Amino acid sequence: MISFNNITKKFGHHLVLDEVNFEINSGELVVVNGASGTGKSTIVALLMGAEKPTTGTVEVDDLVVNEMDTGTLQLYRRKLGVVYQDYKLLPKKTVFENVAFAMEVCEEPRDEISRRVPEVLDKVGLLNFQDSFPNHLSGGERQRLAIARALVHDPRLLIADEPTGNLDEANVRGIIDLFKRLHSEGATVLLTTHDPMVHNMLPARTLEISGGKIL
Ligand SMILES: Nc1ncnc2c1ncn2[C@@H]1O[C@H](COP(=O)(O)OP(=O)(O)OP(=O)(O)O)[C@@H](O)[C@H]1O
Ligand SMILES: [Mg+2]
Image 1: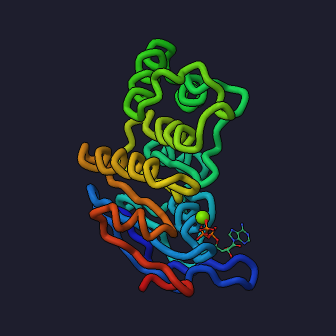
Image 2 (image 1 turned 90 degrees about the vertical axis):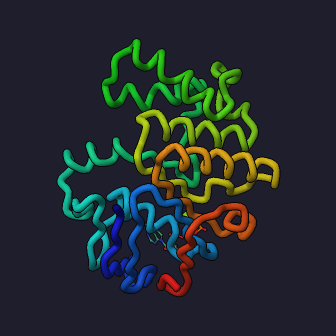
């Protein structure tokens, strides 16, 4: 379970989150919805331990994320699947290598990588693009590659920051269906979006963020 307890986050004097409290239970599908600049990516960064709250605690399964040392944080992050808003794909690596790299940094064995990478690429419909490079993919394909990479360690918690960013309606629907399926397979899923179409398509609990508060 995820729990944000009285989280205030300031960047300098800029108050982004103002004593925010919410919980997400295991197995839930939750959407964080809010306009640009309201703090959605900040929530993801706090959850990843990439940013520390100004005050308050972020807890995941009774562990306090903002108090973890570097080693603990590294192990913790491996259990999460994250799709970043800007994808963070490696332009000089192929589709296959982009996914494989996430396993290599965790020192997973070669044969496990050869088995697992095609499996997740198949899951997102990119098996035929294994040898392509990210800049030769469409926006929707890039997004699916970022999702494949997030799935490689079979995460119990999948976080996707604005996963439908610049996609057209058909691609949005494809991505949403993919998250629905991953959720039905048992993952806890947290998505952020500013797009009303996305949360209309999803049978999810919505956390509405505005003016530093969850409404
Ligand atoms: N590292 C940082 N240093 C300073 N200000 C920051 C930093 N990260 C975020 N901010 C500011 O905090 C506010 C919230 O940013 P955040 O990226 O969380 O918004 P968002 O809801 O994800 O927006 P978008 O929908 O455009 O992605 C913004 O005003 C942003 O400029
Ligand atoms: Mg953002």
